[in-house]
Length: 399
Image (cartoon, rainbow, N blue to C red; front, side, top):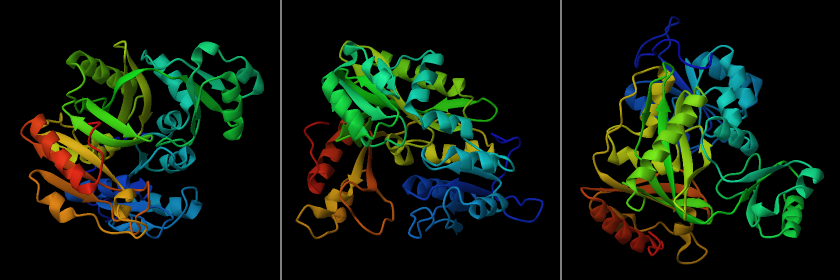
């Protein structure tokens, strides 16, 4: 089964007397926030993750400490759960396929598999009629030699397992491209033409098994070193017609996949005014964290609703919002010894909402939490976010 065939009511009991239970493969912060949302609706939650200090496992009703492909672990997850989702796209699609033999799984393994391979993903975008960056797939020496020089300068990306700037190399010449492919161990890659950007944005949609589709507003994003740093909604720097185009394209991508669950589609708005799709994630996304405090329903509640077959309400933004991603670097502002950031000063600011992920150790580059700022106007949210960033030692000149 790829999607719910009946509604799993919160707080209900199954035929064997077990409480209605939702499961998640993956125990990081996205799984943690999913568990919180599902529990708030009244569901019992189970998490499968090998890490004994898993942030999601720490708050779940049941933490199955096993690898994603562990047969016994998957069997236990299937016994305990009525419906199962995934926390991130690098959970093996094979695990989802195994679970789907006996349980509701959403998104389906086939949809996750598309998102796991950049080459397949780009083919899907084109099939769905959505424009993406000019690119070439490189899997052999012959394909490397045949690359069109017009694609340079570009970014060489591994077809699989790359995220947050990992598995990517910028190249300017054919010689640099060849060296970069060797550096990436000659694995299948995608070369994308480097495009002049005005801004980056994303759209998060949620689709039910009945085909019902809702979306959040377009979100303007700022990345630093390949990692999302700031999201602002409304997207003040992006024209309304571009935002409308992005929403329509994201919905189109989800429909073409017959997707069930929450899906994030990321876009580039180019210097010439063109909008092109960058990539997608078959799950809630960092750029949607603002929905936890600025919207009538969060992306995580919609994930739980879609998994359980509940109605998907159209999200209503009630507050202008800005999200700051909090990396472990904040704990090392004063040297090599980790020190807790000044949360008391940050939380004294109006409209601030701190979300820490329960990770036991702060490390540079590690996602430790996020700060949402909500206000009556975009200008007010921006002003408070600048104050908070200043207190935390984050740069403010680029947002």
